[in-house]
Structure formats: structure tokens, C-alpha cells
Image (cartoon, rainbow, N blue to C red; front, top):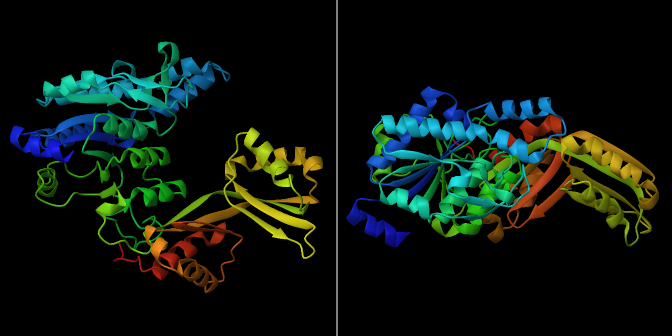
Length: 436
């Protein structure tokens, strides 16, 4: 990438970028014109640009509803043919708009590139991207406008990547094109230390590591899709989270595009790019949690498999797990969490296996939240968990379950204390900035 940048200085091409715009960014023709202006700014700076677009806001939901209305048990291949149409429309409209602004552009559908995927319709995974045709488009000075969320699977059928798949399309395309950066334009101006709607003193981060962003996304932050962050980390794609609602002609954005000032938004990058790590980078929370406790389970080999095997077979993910063994070691209480939406299903699966598991009774609680403290600085510092527990105890917030990883400590608490806990921890770790 550095070699191409040096060569680009001589040829007038400063960088190769993939820009991704979500549904709210392309919600109508007025918004599409703003998107086109952002693209034009990059082109005018001499950059090679590919653009990945989502469907207009609300379009995919409408297409999904029509499929369900037509037939509740529809063919997944035809479902993909229908729901992929939203991105096709947006990519064509943006290409038309760019051309009208004097920017040479053409639209590309997933099968035209092609983006090759598995044949799991509705949840396909990208296997390969053939970039020869797009490289030719770059050589001709054209912007490639790509329909996100889709590729071509088995038997030359359109296959979609699952909800939020346009982020994955963009990062995968950036990796295949050896792009210098993948800019994710969204309705927020970057990644914050926590949800600014909950904590007015949340600060925007200039940079965040792949690992931290992956934890933030998986623990409830909605800025980036978890799958796309994992792909960015695997392929070392630098991702810039920025706002599509900024004025594309603002002097500070033009200056940043031309390399004369710092980049806007938040850069998701390798740890080596960040000079000094904070102890804690952010506080994430998730209300999509439910807790199940099995009381008086026999503490013997095979019991855990009898509990979690049926849940796995039913396609349910278990997150936090804690076990309390009785004083004599013969019995145990076992608690675990699932998503709130799957609580009833999980309860039914466990109750169906009661004879094999051998528990006395089951307690289900859907009124809980998970709070997570995240930061790569934890690797080299002690006392992070202790500070978390003390801050919660000072506010009489009881902890039900604890789980840890190398860069994260998570606790399960009563949902009514979610906001209080987030604000308390944000302050405790010195993350507060000026009130918004």
C-alpha cells in the first residue's frame, strides 16, 4: 500500500478507497446526491474509488415482507432474488447521479464482478472476489458502484450475505482490491467511548484497534457489524467510520481528503498504529439478554453436554456461563445467558431434556442487561475488574454473572440499572469528556 501511495503521488492517484454508504445515507434522491458529492470529492483528489451501497432505508424490510406475504415457506433462492433488488436500484441511481455530475461511473451487481459465495441463501459467505474487470474500470478512470449484500452462489444463483451484509461486502472488496482504506459512511460521526445518547460525556475516539471494535460490536455497539470487523482484522483492512451527513464540500473535509489534516471519524486499525493505549477504551451494553438458571443439577461428567448440546442443535448461542457447586460437591446450580428473543425457545429445549439433565427446577429471567468494559490496555494493567466491581457496588448494583477475556470484563445486572451502570463505569475509568 505504501509503494502504491508513493507511485500515486507521481501519477496523480493518491490512494485506492472503498466507500460504503448505508440505507439512511441513500434514503432518497436528495441523499444520493449528497453521497455522490462525497464520492466526487475523493475523485477530485486523485483517488481511485469503489463505492458499496445498501438499499434505500426501509426497502429491504418491504421486500422481505412481500416474500412472507406471498408464501410463508418460500424458496430461499427466490427470496434472495427479491431482496437483493434494493441494492441494485441504489447502485444504478448513484451511478446515474455521478455521471450527471461529470464523474465517470458504472454500477456492478454481485454476479457481474463476480463476488463468489457459498450457496447458503440468505446467509451466504464470501469465498472469492474476481477483480480483473474492476481493475480495468479503475484504469479507465471510472468509479465502480457496487451493490452490497450480494454475490453469486451455486448454480449461478444470486445469494445474499444476511442482514448488515453490505458492510461485509465493502470490507471484502477492500481486501480483494488491496485498498488503502475502507470508509464506512453512516449516520454517526465515529465510534464513541459509549453510547452518547445514554452518556452525554461520551467521547469520540480517533482510533480504535480491531480487537476492541470487535468486542464493542459483539457486546452491543451498533456502529459496525461484527462480521465485517472480524474480516477487517483478518485481512488488515483499515476501516474509517465517518458521517455521511457532513457537508461534503466543507473545507475541513476537503483538507482531510487532500491529506492536509487529520481524518474525520474513527479509524479502526492495527494496535501498532496507536502510539499509547488507554487502559479502557469504551463501555458497551446490551439489553438483548436473558438468563436461565438450572437449580440442583447433579455435578457429574456429561451434564454440561446434556444441557448445551440440545441448545446448539437448536441453533442457539449461549454466552455467559457460571456454575455454583454445593458444599458437599454433589450438586450444582448452573446459570447461562441467551438472547432475549430466544428465551422461550431455550426454555422449551431445556424442559424437553429435563429427564436427561436431571435438574430440580428452572428459573428464567428476561429482565437483565450485560455491561462490558473493553480495552487492550487490560493486557498490561491489573485492577480493571476490581474497579468495575467497586463502582457498581457503590451504587448498590448487584452482579448476577461475570465473564472475562483478555481485553474485556462483562457483568450481567438487572435491566433497570443499565443507564446508571454505564454512566458510573464511564466516569470510573476516566472516559468522561465535555457534556454534549
